[in-house]
Structure formats: structure tokens, C-alpha cells
Amino acid sequence: MTKLDGVALPRHIAMIMDGNGRWAERKGLPRRAGHEAGAKTVREITRECARLGIGQLTLYSFSRENWKRPPQEVRFLMALLKRYLVRERREIMTNRIRFAAIGRLEELPEDVQAEIARLRAMSAGNGGMILCLALNYGGRTEIVDAARSFARDVAAGRTRIDDLTEERFARYLYDPRMPDPDLIIRTAGEMRLSNFLLWEASYAELFVTPVCWPDFRKEHLHEALRAYGVRQRRFGGILPGTASPRPT
Image (cartoon, rainbow, N blue to C red; front, side, top):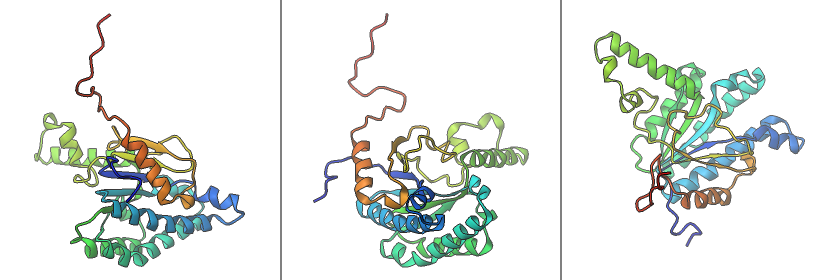
């Protein structure tokens, strides 16, 4: 039995994994120690989401803005990412997880790109949860890239400007098959999206916890899921059976 019995679970959870650096600084450790601890949290949360039957988990792993960090930290993060992609192969295959990635992946180091492609291919036949890493990702960049792709199709005569709808535009996003996130969880207490899934997050429920990512455990995940389970998602409308307000 689980404390989540009877809770309506989201199909797609997206996470902003914030607070690695602050966690390390509070403990008097170098920032890299926070990133290493955060990588261990990724494994625990991924495993728990797969166990619960979540359809997709998307992790904001490296943003476009993260390139502004000190070069030595960026190099460490790229090396840590590569190690993760290699080390987690068995975990991903054991849990029948299908690996995916979104972002300007072609701008990542070539050895990282190779490991992304390898893990994608290895896990392509798995039928369980999708684990998607947002790498070299920015929400505004994704929208701009989609607009450019659409403009190229217009110029080539493959479509017309007047044919553009929200549904058609979504086909040009990094992963057109990805469902919009139902729940976005942010750790470390910041109350912002930080350029994450701006198009897809239009109607996502938000849950912010003060817990830094390295300390985030499955009980914190369950807390977020219980909070999600009692929310009423209207998508701009009203719930069936809800009386309309009387005109004034």
C-alpha cells in the first residue's frame, strides 16, 4: 500500500532541479559536490516516478543560460552529464525507461552527443516511462527554432501562413509527441519558470518546495503529487455542474 492510493496522478511531470550550489555552500562544500549529490537524487526520483506509472518525467538539466557559469563549472557539468548517461544505462534498461532529450543538442560537446544518441537507441524499444532531459534548452529558444522551421516550410511551399494554428505550430517544437506537463515541480523555493517549457507549461500546475534538489526525496515527490491530486484543473473554463455567476 502507498500513501498515494486514490490520488489522481499526472501523466507528465516536469522538474526544475534547483539548489545544488546553495546546498553545497551551506555545507561548506564546493559547488561540484552539490551537482554530484543532485545526480544521485535524479536516480531516486526517476526510479520512483517509473514505479508509480508516470508517463513522462522531464528534467531541466542544463539551460542555455548555464553557459554563463565559470568555464570550469561548465566543463565539470558536461563531464558529469556524460558519466550519468553511461552509468545509468543499466538503471534505465532495468526499469524499461525510454530515454529522450530536447534542446539544441548539436551545440553540446561531441562526446556528450554520442552518449545521448547511444542511450536513445538502446532504450528505444522500452515500453515504460519516458525520461527526457532538457539540455542546452531554453523555452524562448525552442519557440524561435519552431518559428524558423515553420518559416522554412512556408518558403519552400510546404505550408501556408494562413494554415498556422496552435496545434500546427506545436508540431515544430523539439518533441512534437511530448504531452504538455501536468505538473511542474521546482525545488529550492524560487517562484519562477526560468525559461522552462514556456509553450508547453501554459496550463501546468506548479508546486514549489523550499527543499534543495540534493535533499529532495520520494516523500517530497509524494507531497507534490498529493497537492496536485486535490487541485481542480479548469483550463480556462468551469467545472461541469458549476453554476455560472449571475449577471450584475
